[in-house]
Image (cartoon, rainbow, N blue to C red; front, side, top):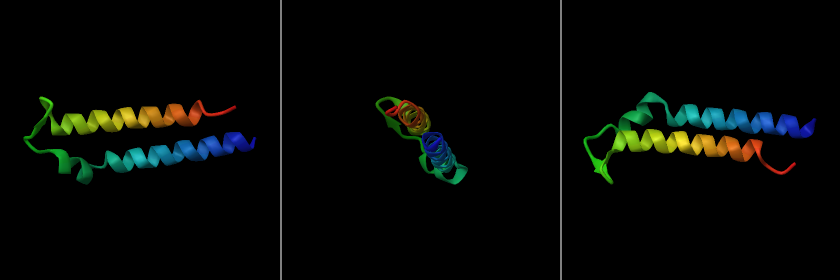
Length: 65
C-alpha cells in the first residue's frame, strides 16, 4: 500500500513538472527563429520535454518492486 501511495505522489510530481515546462510563458522563451541541428528550437524543446516526461513516468512506474 505504501508503494502505491509513493508512486501516485511521484506521478503527480511528474505531471506538475510537465505542466510547468509546457506552460505558455516558458514555451514562448523557445519560440525563436533559430535552428539546432536543422530543427527549429521550439520543436526541439517540445519534443525534448515530451521524451523527458515519458522517461520519467517509465522510471517511476517501472522502479524496484
